[in-house]
Length: 336
Image (cartoon, rainbow, N blue to C red; front, top):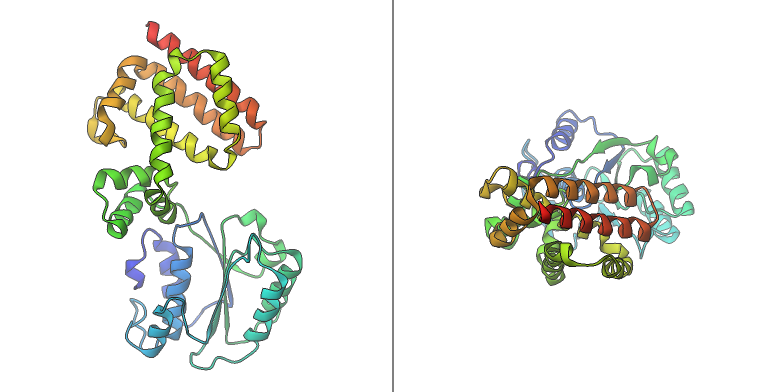
């Protein structure tokens, strides 16, 4: 790994490169962004650079003892401490141990680095112990706190960190990474990149999960037949979805992709823009039956529902209304 090998986060990379080059590292950074966009990768590369015997502007040398210990899985370098949630939260005992370890001077490197992966998952006492470390940090300590949700980080911790934002990656960057890691063809990689929300980690996980393919087919089956499904049956489908709340947002994203592909084909007729390119006859069927106007109306309904659910609207009511409205649009479009 080198700084140049990190995908899609040039601002974060430049910030840390400059801080290392000018010997102006802060004692605490908060790396914030969705899961799988490179926060941990950047944090580990900084740890490698700081432990490397012969660092270059491009990153760690990869050949010295420090680099070898950090390249192990899990890393074995004594001056790196990795903290992750124990279950759903980072617990007090983990932070108590960190306090003890961070006040021991580094044994091999110039700095002792603590990566806390889940700074938005600290319980109250654990958060207070982190705060004490940040208030009185040893001069050799570097704290790298990683979080998905900035609003869930304690304000007192936030105020003592330099915040580094990690935006979602572009679909092109995600697709390229998925192809490289898993050897998928370009079309498959584009599909999982489109479903990932800009996260390489999420795209890789979906590509390796056979349930995702089954969900994709079930989603198409619904939208393909929805003009022939009565409202009572649609409410039954909504009841089924209610039992799978944890997967509803990926399901809605998948539904939007089918509708978006149909709209693009109906409106512009450009097949190379279709994400579900391996199912072109299915996309063409949606385009022909519902047309650009009908598909655009469906996209609006699903997007509005997704936003309502993200704002904690009544789950079942939002899905009931969405499915009934989609059925109405589909039946009307089919009569045109």
